[in-house]
Image 1 (cartoon, rainbow, N blue to C red):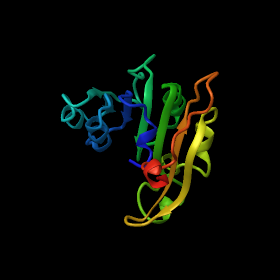
Image 2 (cartoon, rainbow, N blue to C red):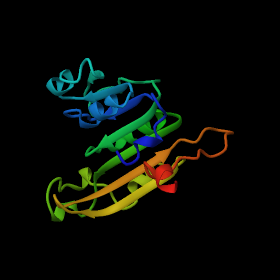
Image 3 (cartoon, one colour):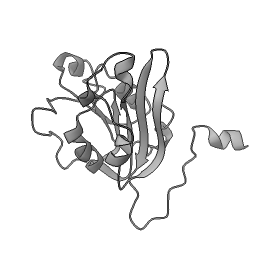
Length: 176
């Protein structure tokens, strides 16, 4: 929610590993056409009518959205490293990548514990090479206890001056 103002008004959003659709529904309520993708057919079916709902095994099968571009890609609590370049490649010019998932250290406080599901320090920064980093965090959060990395990055429009987005929602109101 903190960075949603960076998504173009009415911009197309991809919610990866959408699960029950928390982000899908929130963004759709704000006027964004959302494509929700998940392998759980029951969860995805519950989103039909409010979003484009796609059932797909994105780890074991072909990427079902080849050639499609989005104004935002949202990923939360999901990591499949081979998909990282596909996701950044799915950003339209001016598009925003919003990614948060578990990081190294999480094995000391809960699940996931296996390194294959935990980002190494700086790994999201490396995955976003070529994008303009707007925000990055890597550390511990409480309640529930967990270690995460968060990244917000924008694909710059070639030849255009940098976009002027307020860094926080409501920043213009605070300046008045």
